[in-house]
Every structure is written in structure tokens, then in C-alpha cells.
Length: 283
Length: 269
Image (cartoon, rainbow over all chains, first blue to last red; front, side):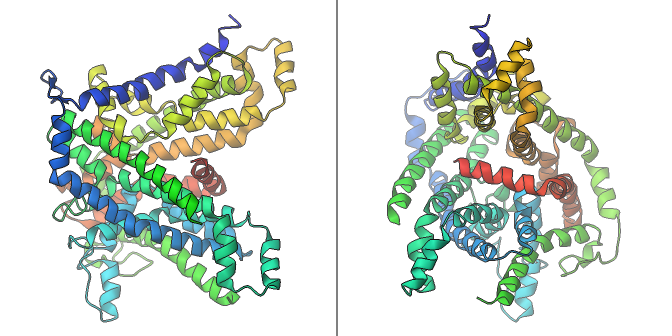
């Protein structure tokens, strides 16, 4: 009895992991070689799903959209979060108020944030365009122009998440020993030099975290385009997860949908591995 | 940089995060024609948007579902996470390291790969349109096990030995003797799990089609996307406000814990 006890304690985890992680991973690989609408029997089709994937214009479109999202999202996220963290790091009075304010969108559902921004970004009555028109500039078709819509979503996602990264950068900045800056001051270093050669190398792990989490976030986008644009206009905001969802639940292509999921998952792991190498060597 | 400029920039940033929520609240209490104005107070004050929301969708029922699912699942996560975390931290057994590495490995696995197979599992188990589909897949999670393991590792062995001498069983040791000593970890896991479940929309959209079983994020999403809001933005916004209020109220009370919990989960990766 005493010897078996540890096994009883970990049993729930093991069973749960087998059912909801190990089995799905194996089954996902099996599914990629089948055609299946969940009702009729599975049909083995060899590598057809993979062939189809490489020829599928919408798959490439979703990938391209994710890339465009990350292109704007990652630099904005790092720039704004680092800037606000720098400001907060020198501030004693009211720091906890500011932190709490920046963090507010982080805890709220993406559903709420998306409905809110759908209104802020609307062409005619949106607050943003009213402000822009108010100072005499032409209105922007934030969500209606295929060349712009994905970037609008990237801006919204930055607004939602940046508070978390401010906190992470703040933790990173506080690990820098003040003596480093004092020594640099004695040597007559400029602010830029201090930032480039002291701050940046010290917070490099945080930058890596932000890059990785943002990348995973980009590949996980779903509710934002689902509510705001339904993937449009002209599929310009169709995201990876949204395309998986469409193939599975609009067309009941379970095999192909699993192939997309499998492929996107591999891609995320590969991209993160590359980022790990690159970001760690960079600075 | 001067102190004035620094505070000016910080205030500007704070306003850009808070003001949209204030605007949202006031828009939800305004009549449709006034929408889009920069305002702090409702223009043409009315409760009509909320009346419309509640008459068109079972939001009260969805609130009860959300609370039920989030509270039950969080409780299960705490129990199962503590059991596994305790075994990994304090007991010697064969396979312990293997389980630890499996947990680390599964945490890096993107959910895109398990999404469709897990849906099929739900179909085959007959769990579509049941609470089981919303609770069981989330009742254990790797991060909570790791956090518990870390917390239990830091406790003195004397605490456990003394309890054993008094004849306590291991479950009583975990939940009665050790739990009070790791309350910050318990709170962190509670917040992360509860918040994640309260805000989750994708999985419910996949496994629930039956309106009375829906949780709030799903119901509000479908209301916003479908035609039932009749294109009335203020009504959609009222529904979104109802979804946001519970978590914002919790945030006002446990603000520092929310921030610390989220930061600790971010730094884990």
C-alpha cells in the first residue's frame, strides 16, 4: 500500500495526459493520412492531405497573414513594453497604479476587447477615425481594406497584451545592477550606449520570452478575426486556427483539418527553435 | 528626461488603457445615435441595451454556466495538481523523472495539434453539448503541477514527518497540513485557471451548440457575430460589458495577485 501511494497520486495526471495529449498527438498523425467527415468510415488516402496542403492557396494565405501580423505585433510589443517599463522603472510614486492600468486589458476576455475595438475602428462612426478626421486627415479603412485589416488586428492585440510584457521587462530591468550604470557614467557613456551595451544584453532573456509568446499568440489568433472580420476582407485576416476551424466545422474535413493543425504545430516549434538560436546569439 | 514629461507620458498611456473601458460602459448606457462620441458619461441615458440583450439571449443562464464551469474546474485543477506536484516533490518512486520530463515536454506542445483529435474524443464519448466537455479536458494542467511541485519542494521535511507521526494520511498531509503553507501558490493557480476558463471562447465554440449549455464568452461571441443584435452596436457592447464586469471586479480586489500570477506564468516559458 505504502509503495503504491505515489502511483495513486500521479494516476489522474497520467490518465488525463494519455487521453488528452498522447492519444490526440498519435491520432492526429493517423488523421493526416485519412479523409473523414466524422460520420462515414475513415478512408485512407495516403499523403493526399499533404499534397493538397502545399497546393492550397488559403493555407499559404493564412501563413502569410500570420507573418504580416507578427511583423507589426512583435516590434510594437517590444518597443512599447520596453518604453513603458523604462518609464516605470524610474518612477516611485504611482507606479502600482500605472502597472494596474496597463494590465487591465490583459485580464479581460479577447471577446470583450475585440467587440470594443470593432467599434473604435469602424470606418464611419469609429472613435479613431473621428479623431483622425477631426484633425483634417483622411479616414483609414482599418477593417475594410485587405492591405490594412491584419495590421489593425496586430495593433489591437498589442494593446491587449502589452501590459503583461511591461511587467516582464520591469522584472528584467530590475536585475541590472546599478553599479554597471555608475561605472558607465564614469567612463562618460551616452544614454544610448548604456542602453545598448548594458540594458539590452541584460534583458535579452525577456526579449526572447516576448518574441516567443508573441509568435505563439500569432499562430493562435482566432477570436479576434472571427468576431471582427470573419477572416475577410478577401481572406486577408484568415488566421491559422481560423482556417483549421473552418475546415473542420464548416466543411467537416477532419483529416485535412488535422493536417493543418499538425503542420502549424510543427511550424511553431520550428520557428521558436530558430528564434531561440537567433535571439540568443544576436546580442 | 524630466519628471514632468515622464508622468505626462505615463498618464497618457494609462488613459489609453482605461478610457476605452469607461467609454464602453457609457456607450452601453447610451442610445444608439450617440455612439462614437468621445465621452465619459452616457448620452441619452437608457437601460434599453441591457433589456434587449437579456431578452434575446439567455445571458443569466450563461453566467451561471460560466461560474459553474470555472469554479468546478479550478477546484479540480487544485486537487489534481497538488496530488501530482506533491508526489513529484516529496516522494521517491520509479518513473518520477520520466513524468517530470513528460510534463515539461507536453507544455511546449502547441494546442493546434490536439484540437481536432480532442473534439473527436468528445464526439465519441458523447460529451458534445455537456458540461463534461467544458470541464474534463481542463481539469489537469501542467503549469499548475509544476508550480505545486516547486512550492512543495521548498517546505521543511519536519512538517511532513511530524504529521506522519501523528498518523495523518498523505492526502490529509497535502490538503490540511501543507496547503496553508503554500497559499500564494494556491492563489496563483486559482487566478490563472479561473481567468483562463472565464475568458475561453474557442473550445466552447467547438464542443457546445446547445444554447442553454453555453458559457458567457461563447454566447456573447455568437450574439455579436450573428444577426441577433440587429446591427445595434450599443447592444453588442452591453453584452461585452456583462462579460467583462465579473473579471474586472475580481481584478479590482486581487489586482496585485493577478499581475504576479500572470508574470510568473510568463516567466516560466
